[in-house]
Amino acid sequence: MRKAAVSLIGVLCCTAILALAHDPRTTAKDFSHGLKIEGAGDLNLSYKAMHFNVATYKRMQEDGQFRARMNSGVWSNIGAAEAGFDVVLGDQALPRGKYTLGLSIDAQDAFSVVFKGADKTVQAPMKVTSDNPEFPYLTFAIYPTDKPDIFVLEGRCGKYRGTVDLKVPYLAEHTHAAPKN
Image (tube, rainbow, N blue to C red; front, side):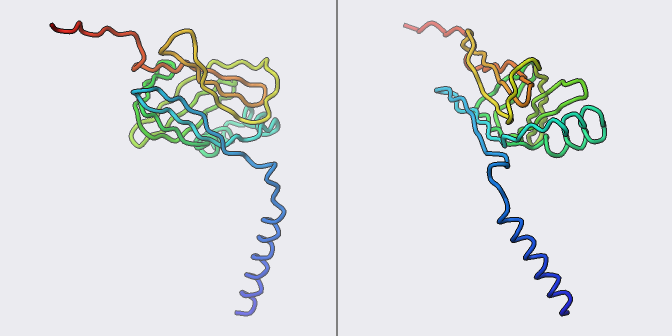
């Protein structure tokens, strides 16, 4: 009994020391980005802006088991998305609803943004470039384009920049019935 109590006190002391030694500058920060469309609702992304780690990324490229573990663990749940209206990511329909936000990365630097819902998973491939300035943390943004119903969802981390078209069918050109006199 006494050994168990001493062991428990030791574990608690070590845990307290680690908690006090924690440096908040080195942990992922919580970010959010959104799009509000009058009459349709909001599209909100909230996520952890994780730091890009070159050594881990290289290991992911070379070790398929490690990559699968990272994709199904860490990268599959980096945040949340709530779509108040239907969207189309690339050619993948994403119905309104709540989703877990994630990424999928393959050995050839192909990135996909992943939205997991209760009954549907949408994986939209991103167009990726790697000749960009270094960006130390994962970040997402939604940008307008010259078309009223198309936006660009951009993700950046390290030297990688991935984009996918985000279409909002609610904003697509449509006709209205002529008023009846």
